[in-house]
Image 1 (cartoon, rainbow, N blue to C red):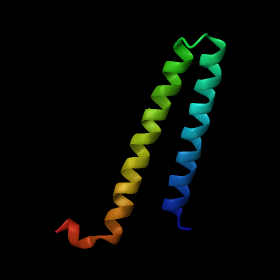
Image 2 (cartoon, helix red, strand yellow):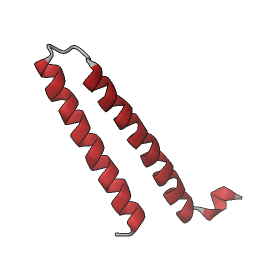
Image 3 (cartoon, rainbow, N blue to C red):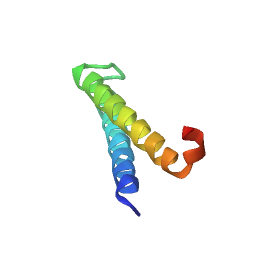
Image 4 (spheres, rainbow, N blue to C red):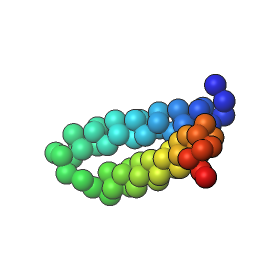
Length: 68
């Protein structure tokens, strides 16, 4: 597994962990979004954006014809 795959896997794992934490916090708050949930959602979005960028660049390494 190369470093790109490892970073991608790590980001995906972190996203899943944050989503689990959101579920826990919302369960404690009666399904209301509070500041913590909003912060977690921002973290998740940032990680998803980075993951998309990494995977898009990774995909392009295997499809050089698409870059022409």
